[in-house]
Image (cartoon, rainbow, N blue to C red; front, side):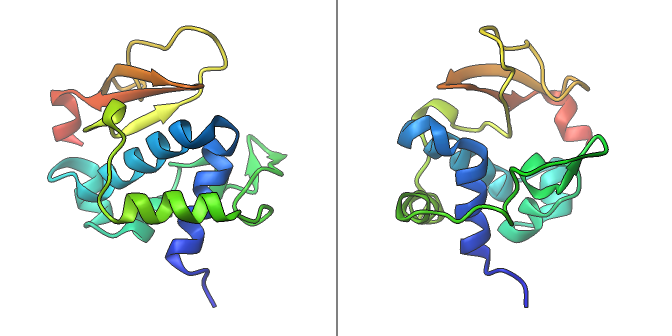
Length: 147
């Protein structure tokens, strides 16, 4: 039996931004929901407005991979259990709330360095908008529409 979508979302929030406080978790959750609601491009075509399809899109989230570059990935959604705060953030995002620092963002990444790269993903479909805690957030460029 597949994991319920709300549970998967709460686990994803914990896995991707659990150590970044409410601010970081809301920013990540908002960006994931932005992919659900975007009206054009790859995420509309692949996700079709369905959170589960967005979460499970191949190659999008390291937290859904049990191996990374051939090495076991212990930080994945199957190895962690969400706490109430992660469900609360999931419910907040599912209710339509959006973190004000990441409106319209479709990507985020933790660069593990002080500076954010100007573009992400590396096909230049997104341009850097903001940094919230450890993650850099990116809005789509006109190239995203071609995906």
